Image 1: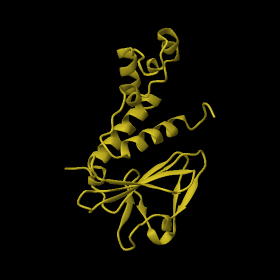
Image 2: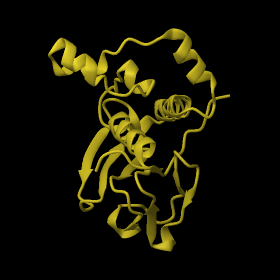
Image 3: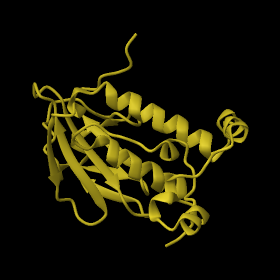
Image 4: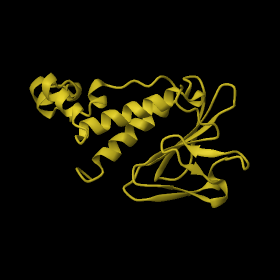
Length: 182
């Protein structure tokens, strides 16, 4: 659809999907720094990989990261926060079980389970610009367990019957939140 009001949310959603998948996530420095694609570099060099090879001005980069209101600063801080949260969840171990969930066209979802089976994580991403709801029955949430969203800290009440996802929102719903150490 092109540029719209969802650019930042859509980008964060795409990166959060990637970091939740099985294996060890890797990020281009330009993704972490939310550098826009270098279309001029592609034209000048004649190959598509140049899109992520833009040279950055250190002083301008530092100023943008230090400005808490800049898009670059907001994205960088949020990606760091999500990477930190991910690194503390045994359900995201590189060798933890993963199954793709069939939840329709609006939600990309997968289930991760820690090697010792103590933690389940349902990674749900709304890949549209519309709010969507998902019946809790669509997931295998064990009634009686305490479920919450790792990313927002929100409790997920099984009895409510639905999970709401804002446009391009990702939820990592778990039965065992492993909070910050110390």
